[in-house]
Amino acid sequence: MKISIMGSGYVGLTAAAGFCKLGHEVICMDVDKEKVKFIKSGNLPLYEHGIKETIENAIKQKRFSITTNLSEAVDNSEITFITVPTPEASDGKQETKFLNTASKDLGKELKKKNVYHLVVVKSTVVPETTEKLILSNIESESGKKIGNDFGLCVNPEFLREGEALKDFLKPDRIIIGEYDKKSGDALESVYKDIKTVIMKTDLKTAEMIKYASNTFLASKISLTNEIGNICKKLGINTYEVMKGVGLDHRISPYFLRSGIGFGGSCFRKDIRALIWKSESLSYDSKLIKEVIKLNENQPHKIIELLEKKAGSLKGKKVSLLGIAFKENTDDIRESPAISIAAELIKKGAKISIYDPKASDNFKKIFPNIHYFNDIEKCLFKSDACLILSEWEQFRQLSNVHFSKMKNKIIIEGRKILNPNMVDNFEGVCW
Ligand code: NAD
Image (cartoon, rainbow, N blue to C red):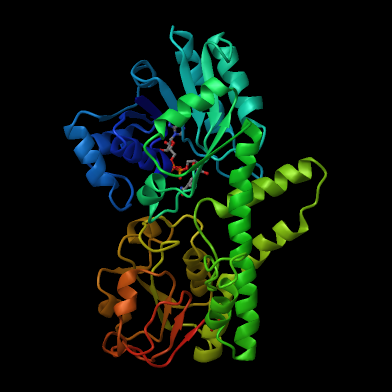
């Protein structure tokens, strides 16, 4: 099928690569001229396994292109996916300006088209947004009527950054919120070669499934961290506890790794948007609010522990290993490393950083920190080392790597070090 995608970020480019792998023809469109130029010249503005190679292959087979011209994208496709950002505005409210512009622009293009076109909302949008904002914009700008002239679906994305393409091609489920059967069937045919459960719902149910999923996962992390904090005080290994807990099939063994809390572009803003939406309906979602509060506090736990061990941090050299919000990505959005670095700076510490991929992004926020391409150089003469994300290479660290530190204070914010290779380290909750 011929697919266009509005928005060439993490989700747009992952979907583009995934659709190319499924044999479709993809044309990406983005308003960011620099980004489009960068991608056209054979680069990728993000680090994600397999996407660059897949897109390179698809370019050779003439199945991938990218443009800033929406007419070109819509004219050369039967389906348009919307993958523009939906960040937090203020007080948790979802910022809809990108969706607003995208759907109006799309409506103007559809006005010129004489054949049926399917619009699919893949951005994460608060329940009722697709019907009240996107549908109404497209109808008013195109002068067309949903049903015969164009179709509409909500198709939330559940990829995990770091595993994005894999998740896209082997999802646990595909949720299709359909305006009508014709729309849903057309979208289902795009995914026909993916073997998974396809669940069809109405538009707002599909929107809500995404929020409920993210809220559930984030709650699982905050609850696990809370148990970890209690275990730490009791001298109990929380990882052993959660292993026992995860053997219960009602709970599952996933998302039970306590640490410095969740980051990433989605959990916080999606949960805050859900809280905002429920408040607009006069519902006070107490439990969900607490998930965010606990997560905001969790990164401070590692500093508390560091101060307990090192005393005042003024003038001390603290090395941070891993600053991306998780391993295998260069994404630092909402990374706990940001609040940890800010707090360390406030307390007068001198920071040195090593991350395999995320340093350039971190530099945009903290230009005056020392960044290293080599772990041992980063650790040289450090008073302490904090490990903040689970890059596979940290699993290989041994006493040799830490031997150049001035004081061997090592604290893990994520459980990654091998106790057979490193001695004298402590975890934030273990
Ligand atoms: P992103 O910021 O990485 O990329 C969005 C892109 O959209 C940018 O390149 C921007 O220039 C472009 N854009 C903005 N307005 C546009 C317009 N009118 N026309 C065309 N392009 C436009 O965002 P992302 O991380 O890919 O997230 C996109 C959406 O997907 C959000 O709603 C997000 O919540 C959701 N989502 C993200 C993830 C994730 O892991 N990143 C996972 C699931 C869902």
